[in-house]
Amino acid sequence: MSLCTSMCLLAQMGLYVVQGITGQPVGYNFFLHCTALAESLGLAWVVYVLDGVVVFTMLLLFWGAAKQIYFSLRAKGRLSRLHDAELTALLTERYGLGPGELQVIDHPDAIALTMGLLRPKIVLSTGLLQMLEPGELEAIVYHEQFHLQHRDPLKTMLMTGCADVLWYIPILKWNSKQYSAAREVLADAAAIRKTGEPVHLGSALLKLLKRKQVHSYAFAYASFAETSINYRIQQLIDPQAVQALSFPLKRMMISLKVAAVLSAMFLIEFLYL
View 1 (cartoon, rainbow, N blue to C red):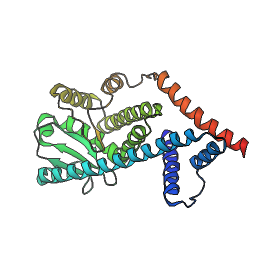
View 2 (view 1 turned 180 degrees about the horizontal axis):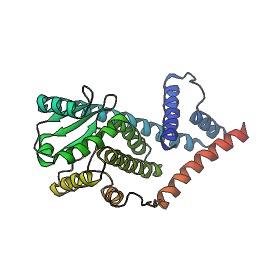
View 3 (view 1 turned 30 degrees about the horizontal axis):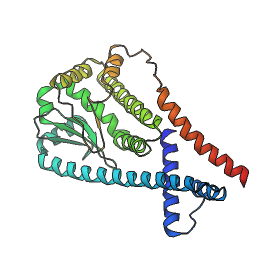
View 4 (view 1 turned 30 degrees about the vertical axis):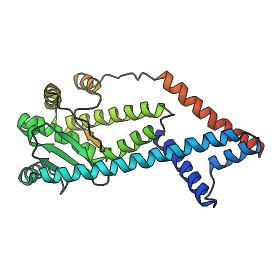
């Protein structure tokens, strides 16, 4: 719901900008009707405010997309230089993965993540392989395989991107964090089902935390040991426990105000017409 609402709102903003530039009508546009209504009621300042919000949001959208493309291409180039073909082929065959679904890089840090939007792949480092026992490595691969099969880097990028662009609707940021946490818990559960026990997954997570080599990157990815660590540890200790969500009241109130303004403009437009 969060993603659909965000995408619809951004699509309407995009059509509004296109129609403003070309001067040609492009289907139904909520923002165009709102500005026309504001002008007819003598509220010219509303038009300027709305134009500013729409243009600023579109600039943020294009800037975010450009950054994502740039950092993804740069990461791809660096990974190709660090590629370890022998270990990649060995682990790909061992875990029954398809061509291009796993890449081992020659790097001393412990790296375990899934990256790529259209063609995701699991990235493991030689530093990680040296640190883990076979059972721990297997648990991590199955964890990342869940992200790979469900295209979680793309989904997470869309959620976080919409939350960043539509920053004036703060509940989207909270939704994005909860979604990322949920995907990590589901990936943990998938790894436990395949390995048959949570011991190896928990010990691998603990080793990564002890080494304090959990990094964040500018490109879209799903990392093994970066998101919702405390919550995941609780789930590993007691899988049957139900964690209650703490709703962000302040974010909800601000978001409701934004929704109320948009709803009021739509209602006034409907009654006026």
